[in-house]
Length: 314
Image (cartoon, rainbow, N blue to C red):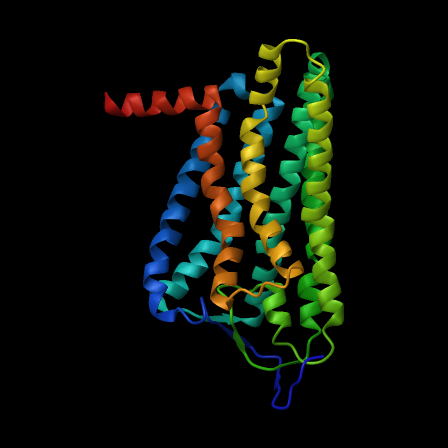
């Protein structure tokens, strides 16, 4: 139950604090944020262009990679420009409706990325367990259905967020101690009983990242079982190598979530500014690193990148 002795009515404008306690360093924070944005946009756009141009890459694994790049581009596009506005121009004011919109779209793309990673785990499962039926099982029709399912799940899970927040009639303050309109950050300044909001927040985590991570682990358990039944060590190594890029991306994506959950379970209280920085890593680092991982570990993509640089050098 929130204490609101001097509550204010639902404000027309919220003020985003950026990174509380480190306001004097906002200019320095803008540099890595801007670099992350540039690398993420160039990297993911390059992946999309290569997959579109190279006909041999029009197969399930690379089409799912293209889907991942689209989600990554969307994720950085709805987060970084607004943060840079705070850091560079002190543009901290955001309307209530714009805050609700941001509250919906930022986690929407995060949940979609988690769903795409689950789809990619299923792709690797089919490729290793049923290699002869790979293209038959993962047909274009199934890929479209998977993409629609990822989008529908994300929309269904995140639609209640702005609706629930719209029903909050009063707040303790109009200042949000965050760099964007995070749902739980706004709940913390809401007046009245916020238990429904907390339960909903936990359900979102369980129905998205928790659900996906469980089935990803299950998929790789079945993959390991299949790989160790292969008699040839060389064939085992080849099978594992096809999963390498995906495993790196999974570890990168879910590590901050697992770290935060473990910290709360163990009772470790992080400084607010440190928590905000880690939360920002959820949305910023994977879109930057994902294309670099696949570019470095995927032969076809690597050859195309080298070809591009070679042409520019000539």
